[in-house]
Structure formats: C-alpha cells, structure tokens
Image (cartoon, rainbow, N blue to C red):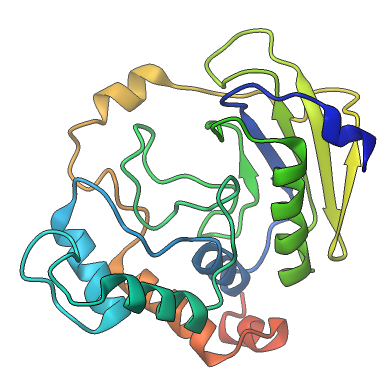
Length: 230
C-alpha cells in the first residue's frame, strides 16, 4: 500500500487543479466521458432538451421518469459513449443545480483548472487516486497537477494534504510543498445568481449534441483533433 493512502481528508475537501490546456475536441471528450447522464436540476425544459438529444425521446413531463426502462436506457448510453466510473472527479459542465452552477476541472474551452468547489463526502486519498488513474489512462494527453486541501474552499488558512501529478497516462502521488493555487468561493455572487434564468446550464443544446458526435465519430485523439483544428 502506498504510504500516502493513510493520509486523512476532511468531509468536503476543496479540489484544486491546474494543467496544460487541451483542444476543444479533447475537452468535449473529457466532459462527456466524465459525466453521468443522470440529469437533475430545477431547469425542466433544458433537461427535456438533453434527454431528447441523448435518447431521441421527448419527455412529456419534467424529468425522464415517464419513459419505460429509464435505468436500462441510461446504462446503454453510458456504454455507448464510454463514460468513466467517476464520482469525486466528475465534470458537471452540462447541467448542475449546485449553488455555484456548472463546474468541473475541465472547461468547454479546453482550460484545465478549478479552485471553487469541494468533493465528498469523505473521500479517501486512494479513491481519488483510483479515479485519476482511470482518467489518465483514457486521456494520456492530460498534463495536470491536483491537490486536495484540509478544508472547504470557503475556509481560511487552508493547506494541501495530498498532490496528484498526471502526465503521459500515469499518476504520481506526492506530499505538497506549497498550495497549488488559492481557493476561491464567491458566496455573494452565488447567492445573487440563484434565480437567474439558465444559471444551471453549462452549455447550449447544440454544444451537447456536438460533443456527443465527437465521441460517436471516433474516440481516438487524432480524429478528435482533426474535427476541431484551432
């Protein structure tokens, strides 16, 4: 067992990630494959748009629960689009009811960065490591450093507990020498945006459809890059 696995994390540790940007096509691949396809929000119309794009069925009511064998259909789509078994490191860039809106460590523009949200509850160093291992294996072009802190992003005097370095499809654990980036939690802005229209939407329906097309066309790095030359 790796000695770092014995380190203790709080209930909701802040996640920090900073890395080399990826292409638009690569970002689409990462976001789709680290999502869940279990959409839940206060934005019923957009949920129905997403379900129609994904399943080819238009819901007649909010949610997807009126469609027979919903769980079976969802699992079939998870397999079709090769979704990873992520939980702590899931990207929620499509739709999110989180007070801060859609969030994740990969953005649609290819930026690899986050410092505004926590993961949990009670993750272990090993469980997060296992998810990074799966992510690094599937996306070997990723180059990033990630840290988990000893508290939530809204707290003061935070310090890193563990550091994950991802490069060339491999993950290395290290004891942090200093905090990677300063966490940020804008409570006031989040509260003011609570009732803003579309605040839970992380992309347009066309972007979602385009991202699905990227995965269906070809999962290879070369083919995806060809689709989105800068």
